[in-house]
Length: 312
Image (cartoon, rainbow, N blue to C red):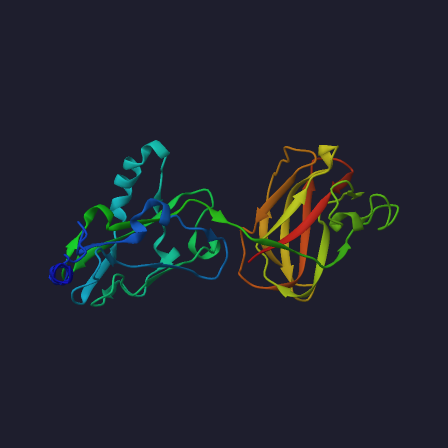
């Protein structure tokens, strides 16, 4: 019995196991080539947003030696991408070249490692500077161009970074309200000016109308704004503002026009409408003013609410 046990132990000691091996051993690819990992959540803000990308090598042992990987942006691939996913109704276009930046397009998968050093894609979504529109689908295709060793897996060597909408984080900016024309019963009346910024959609401001009446907010400190909202009255569409200028000032006397609107028609009563500044100079102001140039012919003017918005 003893000799049989020793024999079994000796036999077991001579067994050799094969090293773990993957069918894709030494194949180099981009993890971000997965269509679900390349959809970006980009906010409409003026600070850059960073997305990382890089290369990976398949297998259980990592890179047998340092592998240099070179990437490139290839917008010519977008058309084929749209065709491949036509069943998803894809209509991506190349993102404007000034809407993103890549400082470095080469990286290394170090010996014994499976992933390269991460590279940074910086995306700039400030509409004023880049022209990015929230209703356009953008794409930034980044592909592996060359590798110094291993086998390039062409099926997963391109990451189509997709921006199919711009997300918005907005906060209200409040201030001290003054108006050029007050309600005939005073600011605290049922339809007095305080109703214009009371955050209550069941109240409204009504005053006599004449061209170039205005309402103004003085902030606690100078702020850069991105948009504002107007909520139309619940009746009498002829009292609606038709044309106006939205302006900024730092002394309450000299005004810069930041947004111009002409012949605007409100479809809903009441209805809230957002206006992003179409003439923004990218500056901060202490005062903001809504200068009403015309309405739709009524002797009175009305609005339910006026709000200032800052994207962040």
